[in-house]
Image (cartoon, rainbow, N blue to C red; front, side, top):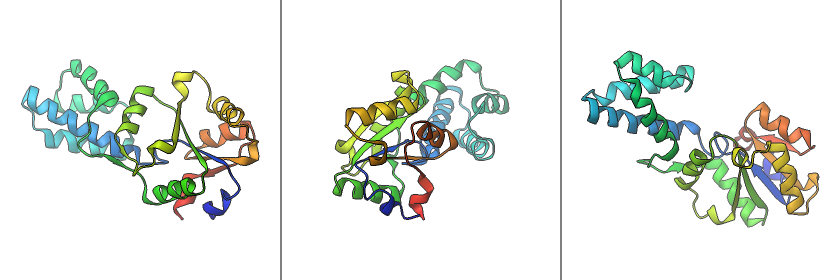
Length: 202
């Protein structure tokens, strides 16, 4: 699929954030690094093996219950779960988050074509905003309008519909770029054209 051809007649493109614009793991692994450093400082337990454990666990099984598994493996007090969770919300990252190369080029082309760009993201709004603030947008940030579905207490499809109304656009004039069946389903509920983000990388 030629994504550039797909959007040539669109006036607005809607994106999810994680694993669409950048890899979610780039954020999480830096959070794990910071937490491992925190544990080394407070409990005198070496950070490197703790970080390696979390990295490997994430790669194999994802992030579910990763704190509990790590705490068991290294005999770490469960009281630190609060610190772990807070880091996910407000961590100051050692490195900026970088957009996928082809997605950066795609966004830049949308700006050149004067196509509106919206981000509609699920998840904790504070965490998602923290990611956005620490992303290297290469000057694109002024062209983005962001909506947090949890903050608005609306489904993505409801937000999509409201965005169309606000911009006086028909369904055929917009496009959703997502990464999973949920994104596709939400777009389909209001008959919005949809493409997988991976199609932009081919």
